[in-house]
Image (cartoon, rainbow, N blue to C red; front, side):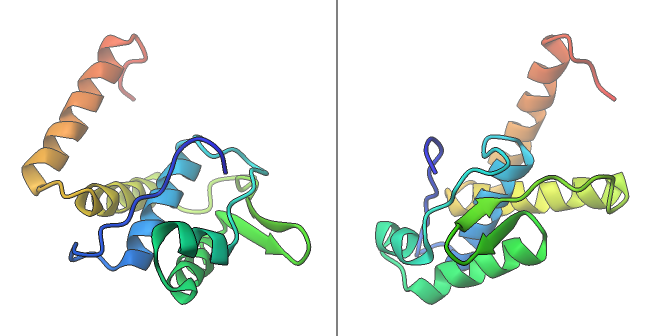
Length: 134
């Protein structure tokens, strides 16, 4: 995994495995981690973050259950191909993205007001960029 990094705040109320899961899910869903991109091994990411391997393994298991990553013996853990069609209603997907973003923002120490401000600002930048709202 080159590029974006995962950060964990062990003093945050959000468990470390959830911080890892939420951040990786957000990177995958947003396309910042591309299909087929290799993730660090459980041991490597645990060592990089100063966490127990079981913590990272739990995050990876949850990402596999959500079909965002796949692990193959000998091939490592990679970002999975996006599903062929919508698996869930757009409302469910939006709720999932919001939950992932909120967990990642909380892991960075953001309070509710900062989270809402960030979303508001992102919506306005998106609208001004000419992409419009759907």
